[in-house]
Length: 81
Image (cartoon, rainbow, N blue to C red; front, side):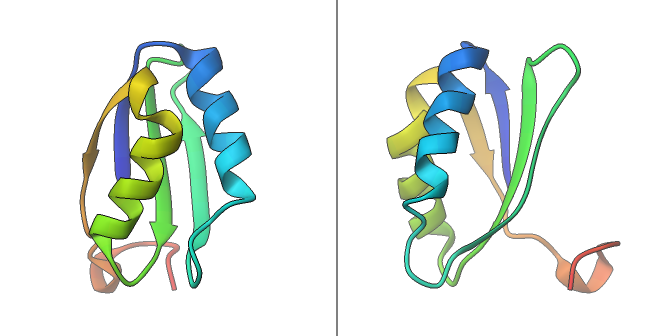
């Protein structure tokens, strides 16, 4: 999970839209959602490495948000396989 506090909403989402076509091998983007005011975002990307997700995400949107990264607890999640 990538939980972001967004500083430039337009550039953040533009970067992620471009990044979607460049996902690392084996990665799947499960969810991308923003708060109504655009100040916060949650993205869920399934991948074998949280470091790989962090590197990928920061390369495309890191300059436009401060993001925290967490490994999701799928066993206790609702709606995730």
